[in-house]
Each structure stands twice: as structure tokens, then as C-alpha cells.
Length: 364
Ligand code: BDR
Ligand code: CA
Image 1 (cartoon, rainbow, N blue to C red):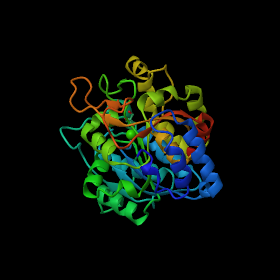
Image 2 (image 1 turned 180 degrees about the horizontal axis):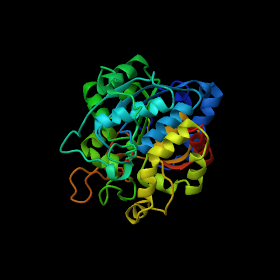
Image 3 (image 1 turned 60 degrees about the vertical axis):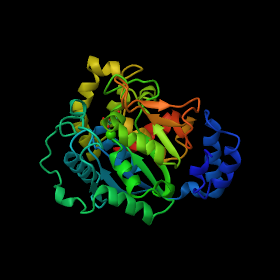
Image 4 (image 1 turned 90 degrees about the vertical axis):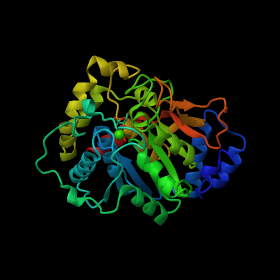
């Protein structure tokens, strides 16, 4: 049953159960309307959202974290760190730097996997800077003494078990920590409110290899395990989707020009990537013309606000593990040939006005 993952959401379950028997894999605009309706009918919409965020803190992860911190009704339970854009040590340091910039160092940060399940790691230093945050010196950066003693994977399991049915897990890096967590605790996905992932692609457009998006390509086996074993409501902000919904450079300028410490921090760490975006190589990557793409912020916005996603496709998804050019590419099973028991929501249309507001608030 493709609806099973949603049934543990008490405030939407009955409405959803009625609807889901009729609707399987298809474009699900209506489903989002029903979800919103059921939330306002039951009053659940105003309830505080508990978020746990798994990041490989590069610049867009930083933007996503800041978006969540600025959102009313969001409780950020912790940040778990994973290798990816840079080393996991840098990721930890960067997460602490972001929290410091937002005056929220009380939020616990946990160190996780330093490499993929198989093979060697890759990084995205050419885009995010070698240190992941634009290689901008920061003499006041918090030290790693502030990290929690518990590792990211046990922390993820503990936090979800302490808040059963309430946590939305947002993953904006390679999925290594999530794959390890579900191997240690197979019941973990059934206790999540939802899973929001930035990663994968739908039109085989790569930003790292010919057909591979960075987060899935950085650990294809982990992505495979997560898409198979997390049978909870799963929302994907895939690469091409983020490109089709990019913001303008004019918006970016106004965004960074806000008179605040957070905006100045962002301007400093973002400079390197802005330069990179305007090179020929990146302009080719950006699918539908140039502009400002804060990839990870779309997954975060969807977790923060249930009314953000206006239209999704709903299909079973997997990851290519063996292709010469396609290892790490997301596979969308539109025909249902994989006989999978779970389908993900692949974001198609989102409320861009809301997105701009959330982004602006992030740097206020
Ligand atoms: C993803 O890759 C990383 O470099 C970004 O932080 C984002 O999560 C985009 O493909
Ligand atoms: Ca990321």
C-alpha cells in the first residue's frame, strides 16, 4: 500500500486513507490540497515542527539551516554531520559557525560518517571552497570542543525514539548517516513524521558526473538503502527541480544586502560560490539558465511548511549502482516494474513567493 507511510501522522491519517485508495503513482497536486485541508481542519498546522537535520555543511546547507532557524514554530532538535562537500570535521565546524552566526549554539551538533559506505569520498571544494564555507577566514570560529560526545548515527536514533511520530528528518548531504541508522534500527523510518531529501535527479542531468547529482553520487549505496528502507512519507528536492525553481541574481543581491550580521556572514561565505556559478562549466550545469540556486533550502522549506509544495509526482525511486556513466543516478520507476512497496513525492511545483519570504527571513 503506497499510503502506509502516512498513516502514523494522526492528524491526516483518516483523510489520507480515504484518498490514497484512489490515487497511486501520479501527479499529486490534489494530495497536497487534502493534506493542507486536513491540517487546518484538525488544527495541526500551528503545532511546532520538530526537525532533525543531517548536513554536509557547505554554503547551501548553511542557507537551509538558517532558513529553519528563522522559521516560527520550528524546533531544531540537532544537526548531524556527514562527509560530502568537505571533510566531516569541516562540516562540524561549519555547522557550529552557522549556529554561532545565528546565536543558536545551544543546538547540539553531532559528528557522523567521514566517508561513503563503499569506496572513496568525493568533495565539492571547487564550488563551496575547500573548507566548505567559501574559504573565508574566521578567527572567531567555534572549536570542535563544542561537538556532542555522542556520534551522529546513535544520536539520530535516540532523538527520533524520544519523539516518536514527530520528527521530520531533513537530509541535505550524502545519505551515509541515514543508511547506517536504518541498519542499526530498522524501525526508525516508521517513527518519523517525514523525510525530506535534497538529492537525486529526474532527467539524468548530472552536476557531478554526467548523470549524477552530488549527494547521491557521493554515496550511491547509502542513497539506495535510504530510498528502499525509509518507508515513511518521503519528499525529494531533486537537482533539476531546484534548477527550474532558481531565484534571480537580483533577488540574491537584495537578500545579501540586508543590514544584519547574518546577511554579512552569508555574503562572506557565499562569495566563492557566486563566482563559481558564473563560470561556463557551472552555467552548463544549471539546466535552465543562470541564477541563484540554494538547493538544500527547498528540502528544508518543504519540511518547515506543509503548504510549500504545491505539486509532486509520486513514484517509486531507486538509484543506479553499476552503470559506467550512470552510477549514482536516480531511477524513477514510472511503470512500477521494480515492484517496490513505497513511492516518494518528487517535488515539481512549490510556492516561490513563500520561498522568497523564508529566504529573506533567514538573514534578518
Ligand atoms: C547538493 O550537492 C551539494 O554540493 C550541495 O550542498 C547540495 O546538497 C546539490 O547537488
Ligand atoms: Ca548539501
